[in-house]
Image (cartoon, rainbow, N blue to C red; front, side, top):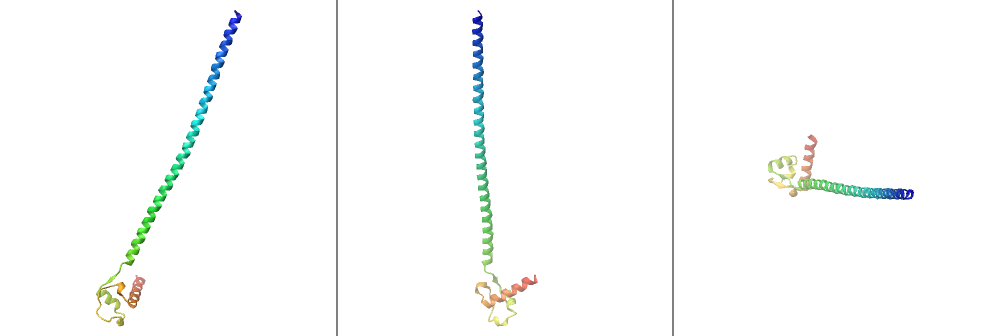
Length: 135
């Protein structure tokens, strides 16, 4: 009878030992799964950071392109405004030419700056410089 009790106790110890070993194995597998999930999360975090950096660079490039387009448009409008011919009406042109009677050869008609002679252009520049210096 003592042998039966010893065998039953031995079987109980083996069952508890196997159960404990299985629990340890399950805990180890769960810890390994947790580590793998953490590694995947870390990889995804790096991927998210890279995609955010790429989006930031794209947004900055778009902003720089818009600023460049605005600057180009402003410069184009300035050049266009400067290249437009200035028309001088008769009284204004007569007043500008009053200082130099040798340039008045005939009736003064409205004209475009492109039609002026080099002497007339120099006179206009001189008068404009005087007006700007007085301002």
